[in-house]
Amino acid sequence: MTTRYEAAALRQFASQLLTASGLPAERADIVAEVLVEGDLFGHDTHGLALLGPYLNSIKQGKMALSEEPDVINDRGATVVWDGLFLPGPWLVVKAIELAAGRLAEHGVVSVAIRRSHHIACLQAYLKAATDRGYLVLLMSSDPAIASVSPHGGLEAVYTPNPIAVGIPTDGDPILIDVSASTTTNGLTGRLHKEGGRLPGPWVKDNQGQATDNPSVLFDDPPGTIMPLGGLDRGHKG
Image (cartoon, rainbow, N blue to C red; front, side):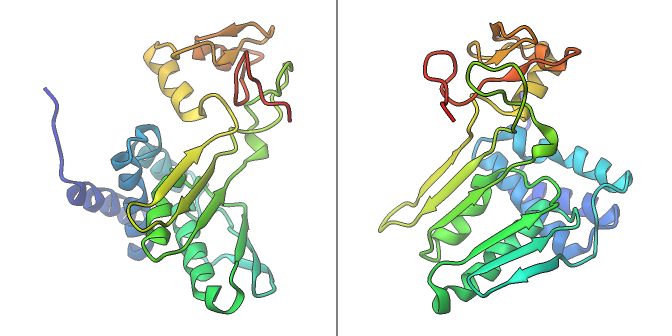
């Protein structure tokens, strides 16, 4: 039997846990909103499934709580922040708000954030911008956690590198959230724990053999995720 919960109740639950762990209430509310939004879009590996790891990061001192991001550079239309490992969803929401506030003057505004904590589901941020008539483009990478090998290669050299774009229209917005890999670290990690298989040969073992078994990513040495396109249409770089 499936138990169903109201989205508002889940937001409140997540926010209360984050606040109890020391995250300021306003930031906890934003993180909870983004996580539940990810679930509502169907990205259940990047929704409330991340709440436990986030709470663990707080407990282990790996997520900063109350600091403000350092401004490394600000030229009006382009801004660079040091995120100090603050909550990723809060940083992204604040960056989008900053960019939106400068559009009237600059037309196009870009904000780059380094050293952010995990930012969850990129699609979860898009509609807040498109509802205001803004086009939004989000890109993320974490070179410290490489898991994807280039087409024909064995060594992991980059992460899934998600890219999301929100395009306003006269009706429903166009919301796109894709990766430069055949699958995500979140999905392979979940299937590994469950003993499940991928829908196709989306990963390679440490000998370069294609397989649908996500557990090869956890071997020693580990296998790798294939780039977008997989075996027959692999990304050329």
